[in-house]
Image (cartoon, rainbow, N blue to C red):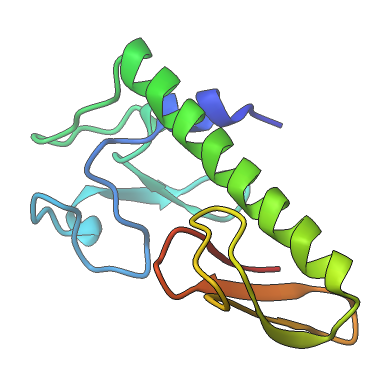
Length: 130
């Protein structure tokens, strides 16, 4: 399994996900698609390890990879901090003061029967679904 840094380094800066028809610079994913690989998935020029050509292909520098990993880690820390505060309430749903931004009753949450937490702060500082 690849590390987060390896995943980021392998992905073109313009990739927006296969749920979209084009990347950030307007290249159609169908136009940079190769034959299916050994795992039965389409190969795309959007991934460095596929070695397919694309005129707009651009992969992140080491500094950009490092910055994205740090940003992801900060986001995960916000989620963990908020999740801990939610679990401490003992409630299955409600709204609490957000531990990130401090706004009162801004962090709305619901805990599903399987224990998964869905939460979102009104300010947008933290949100997730498990």
